[in-house]
Image (cartoon, rainbow, N blue to C red; front, side, top):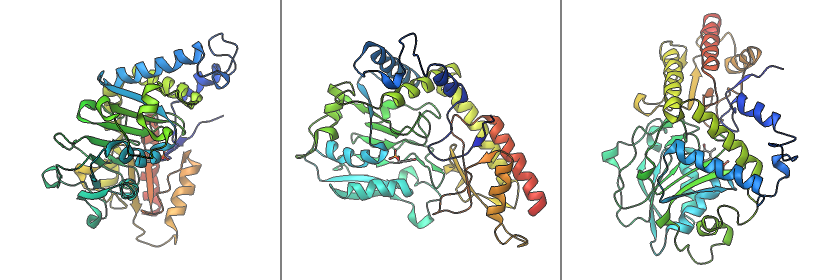
Length: 365
Ligand SMILES: *Cc1c(COP(=O)(O)O)cnc(C)c1O
């Protein structure tokens, strides 16, 4: 059995050590005689797993005491609706920053509930950059400001946290959470689908400041109220127990690796060397402005100068696969390739990709 280097944007690689530990504990967790999958979510075994996971996440992200951590279902996509439902109060407008495919989806859902003001919009630059902070057009009447710190598809990442004054800042951190330290106190809500940097799909983490767990708009279903989940410790109904457990193992793994500072050091190195390889060749190309380049998702295209291969991209993908480098195909809206190099992608995986890219260029560039 050989594990490959999997560059999938999500669900993505998990640390091998985490999967091995899950395997070892699969049939009998800690002498309980049960798999975690078979445990009551209200039993003392699972409650201890859940509490440890939350405590470890609070520890690695230094989450202040006036924030709740919710372990929900429905993906980041459900948050696109839960945010306006819970945060609008008696306001009728919200600010959104449009930097790519995921912000567009959040905006489309937001429009079902309120007037959306685009505080920033890089669509005319084909989503290859982020707006300058002093160019943001923030509206003091907005109920909140929503943005996507890392656009998973375009490979665009903010190099600053917008200062929104008293208006709560809401961040879809699905593809960048846990990649580096972040000052949680700057945010009203941080949310993330798990399948990029946390654990298996099916779990969504919401970190929410206490005062924002208020009155949702009339008609909000029980399951869509933050208060329901905050009051019940994310156990109003059956939570995604196994995913919660695996997320806990990932948090332990991050702690062992030096926490988010440790992650950041490795992630910076991985990203810098891949961008250097792309920029150092005139065969590979990344369109994103240097200051807005993602550490996690790196799209690149191939310049088919000689046309020896009518479909050079397919050749690249099939040769890469033979070298154990899989899921490099870019998103259909961008084309080319995309290397997603989340926390669980070892540095050796990036080294192997770079050396494959250099050989491929020699033969086909
Ligand atoms: C993957 C992703 C989503 C969608 O997450 P789901 O959990 O599938 O709903 C939303 N936003 C960003 C930034 C993502 O990367």
